[in-house]
Amino acid sequence: MTLRSQGDQLLPQRRPRSVSRGSVGSLGLMAENGTLVTEFVLLGFQLSAELQTGLFFVFLLLYLITLGGNLGFEGCATQFFFFTLCASAECFLLAVMAYDRCVAVCNPLLYASAMTPQTRLGLVAGAYGGAAVNSVVRTRCAFSLSFCKSNHVDFFFCDLPPLLKLACSETRPRERVIYLLAFLVIATSVSVILISYLFIIRAILKIRSAGGKAKTFSTCASHITAVALFFGTLIFIYLKGNMGKSLWEDKIVSVFYTVVIPMLNPLIYSLRNKEVKEALKRALSRMKVSQAE
Image 1: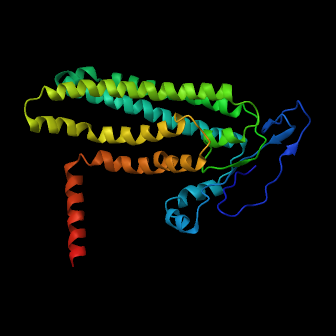
Image 2 (image 1 turned 90 degrees about the vertical axis):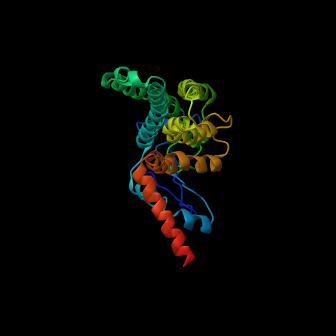
Image 3 (image 1 turned 135 degrees about the vertical axis):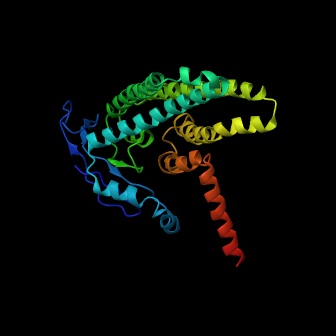
């Protein structure tokens, strides 16, 4: 079965096969009304012509992959698993980075002995281990539902909010588990980050010179920016209380943490490099000169 993506034009939708009540297909789940969903179709962004032109180059590669890939029921579940794995791992890794900055600022002389290679490996392994557990449980909860309303996923990848709209079985028990997991991941990561920065702020306030304070805080500026962008979008989508009710807003916000933020991260972290700063200044100077001419 293929997973197709559509823009403004609506293609004929094949009705799911009817099966006898009580039977379960090998490639899908039977709904209570006796129909079987065996494939999903991504609808993508349904925008006006002007907005589609502006976003064409941004999503060109994404749409080519979507159109060319074969994503059936198992493919959608696999994509959802790895997406959740990567998002959860980034939450935990941002918390690990905050702890690393805390040790470096508060105990610079003991940093080498505190953050040994073994310690770093353990922290990274713990981050990915927790992300894997979260991904398995969330994927199991999401794809153990019965889907019968439609096989058109009104999104540009298999995410939780649009999948919940297609479920015809009771979703509240599984939604509670999914909400709880999302809250635990975000709350744990944010708590570690906030506590780490409280210690960092306390250490910065003990520095007497204003230049020393600014230099120490600048080492954390890129991490703070990445944390604000990433967790802000996650909290908006998964903890706002009306998951899946406004898919248009979810689409726009999802663009930030799936496309925009990963593109900005290299720029955010590289701005600490003096050579990058100088190159950026030279580029801005050339732009001003060209505009003046």
